[in-house]
Length: 442
Image 1 (cartoon, rainbow, N blue to C red):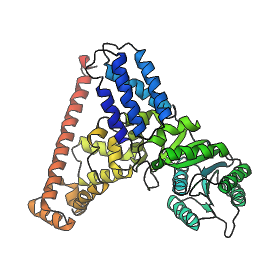
Image 2: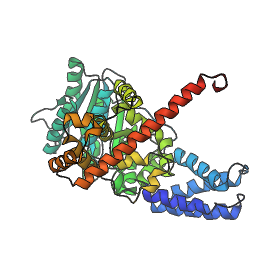
Image 3: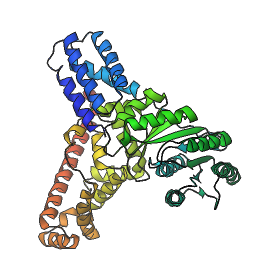
Image 4: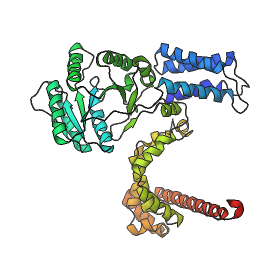
């Protein structure tokens, strides 16, 4: 996502490197490259031009401080304007009510049903009791799919056998929610292959009947400007409250994300990447702007880690590391925790400077399987006592894991280097604590 745009913007800023000051000429050249990069990313030309006009005006109005280079200044200006283009600030989901009602809209194939399941999981994690409603009566597979998703996330799915009236289903589902203590109702509606009058009339009737707190328009980010045009049509009829961009992990240039707020003046509330039910993120304009410019997104990375890692377990592990008792069992547990956080390449891309370095590197989540197989082929004693791995033990582990002995030796070597590094860091921290105990160390 945004990889091509990021590299194009970086090349645009290079023209200012080594320049002593901002001039009309070097700004014009940089701005021209930025505009080309945005248009190539499938951003509407008018939006791209308006964006770069503002950037140019702000850049020419700035005096470059001695501590800041023209390139750094332009990056800061573009970052600020990208944040505004993406919506400016994070817009929270409204889930207050008895019950709160969320209506899901969009074209067929945009990922509405999968998103409904992800949203139910997300809302449940906030301590709410959601109810999923199968309101797509034209595609039987949609009802079955929603039932499967509901079972996977532990959320009830309301269906009506034989009913063909989405308005009645939605109204009855709300009555059911009130009677059964569900405080959020998520209504999945029918999509079409293209916008048509029948579809728009039907969902407008559902809106009128249930008076939703939120109407979320789900759009396939891979469709670029078509997605923006469809959003505009839906918004004219529904006046939706927010946008959800799905398939952001696909071959998307990012044009929909960068254009949609300007066109419909509605915030992007969620972005969805992948089929996993935990692959749903609240949209943060400032963080996305930073990622586009290769600055990483440490805040999101930390939040993902906090969702997965247990505080008590972290403290227990810290004590083991301080005593130099970190073993293969601990290492395996950490690998499995990291995998729960999501796609490894996406996670590494959140670290400043790393995204650009690994953009052409194929990092497969399956690459951990070999390491896991090796550790799982060890006996409990061997996992807990890393120094016990003799040559014969390594051969047995290689045979048991189906891996080559060189892979086992490589893992053992890397593990030992990691333990040495942990030991060194502990000594440094210990020295620091001793220094703080001295009068001049306070």
